[in-house]
Length: 461
Image (cartoon, rainbow, N blue to C red; front, side):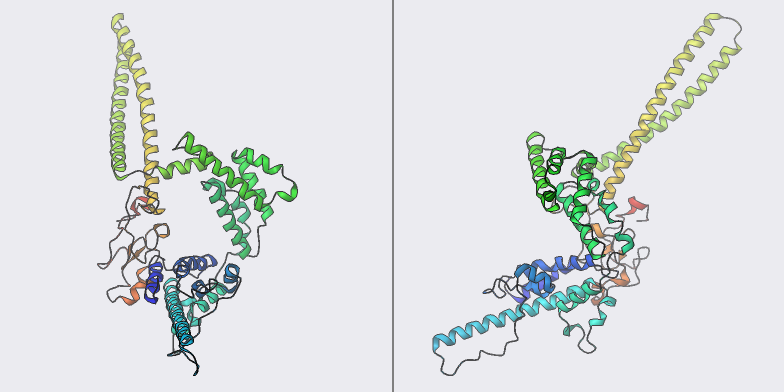
């Protein structure tokens, strides 16, 4: 991007994809906002092109965060006058250089102002005003507040994890492997929990991470050779910094082996392998239709079987009564006994088949629920290229499906929103938006994704 207008549009695009918060921002929320705004700022190469250590990321970064990246503080471009100030005796070549420098600085200032204003609007879109109103100027409003000042305020006041919850983090870490699919993802999850513990002033040390990770690998019987090699290292070498590259290398080796031996396999055991298989084989629309038909047929078959069983039981009872009443005709009685034996055996076979049919129904219903739940978990035909069971309409301002709320509704954004019509920031500037609209009474509002959660909780469409 080369102009302030293009930069503004890029930040606005990021804003449209970010779901507004409906609660006091947490530290994680503030980091998510920063991550959403950062890409267009980083990619503006035209800003201060002569100084590679000055980047528009400084518009939202903390002082320490920016310094960690560039080892210098962010330099805010100075306000420039109407024209360059030239010495009276300057020669033509010097005049051209000074004017060129002036134009460059003026362009940098314009890019900075565009980025700052766009980020302020992003923050106002993302955060309920309650939590930033103290920064608002009584006359100039938010035009007198920089994005950097708002982000500093949010970092200072953001709610974090309470100590009561933080004390449970080590036990949560013990179950992380069961919910992850790979070593890199496992490492990321552990380190995110470690960061949360640090913010709550109950830090989990790197030594604890090593102990937890080792125990998880042994308990699940995975990467046994790597674990053995790691534990043979001297005490000083068994660090978290050493654990990560060793297991990532083992993970990469397993991935290569999987591609060579079985393109559809999974090198990991236990829950990780099962989860990957489920996510890589999400039922298609056609499969779901077939599945629904199969369930219906099995149910009908089960019902028919029930009728047949009842008939067999009644016939069996009649034959037994006939046998008891008979006083003569041995051959007739023998025939009745033989028929009774046959019917009894048939009963047992029918009962066994019915049990099997009902088990199939239970398994297929579970598979169906998981397919429907995929919609709640953000399933879509997106960047990953995965085919899913249900296509979901994504509207600007509604956020990713993973953040949708069961039972949620917004007059402008439709069903599944994690904010209500009354709290919609986008609707503030839309005279057609109706804040009193609800899921049960949409007042003619947006119908996107209607019924998306009806299969999950039995809610009305």
